[in-house]
Image (cartoon, rainbow, N blue to C red; front, side):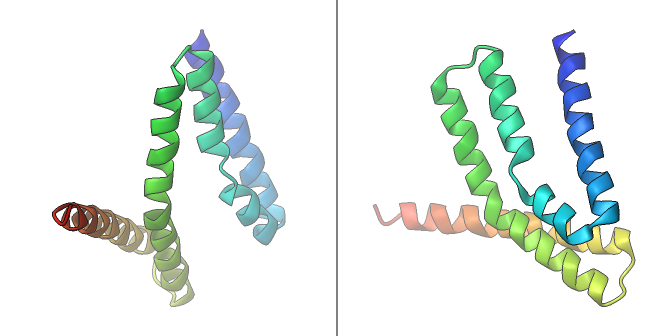
Length: 115
C-alpha cells in the first residue's frame, strides 16, 4: 500500500509540472529544476525509517550527479536548438551525462592517488 501511495504522489507531482510546463514553458522548467524528486525521495526514506546516515549519503549522491545532469541538459538544449530529433538529443545528452560521470570519477580517483 505504501509503495502505491509513493507512486501516486510522485505521479501527481510529475503531472502538475508537465501541465504547468505546457502552458508556461519557462516557469515549468524552473519548477522542474527544483529538487522535487530528491526531496520526495528523502522524505520517503525518512518515513520508511532510514537512518540519517543513509539520508546524508543519498544527498551526497544527488550532489555528485548534479554537474553531470547540468551537462545533459546543456547538450539537450543545444541539440534541440539545432533541430536534432528529440530522441537523438536525449541520446546525446545521456552519452554526455555518462561521459561526464566517468570523467568526474576518474578525476577523483586521480586526486586520491596524491594522498
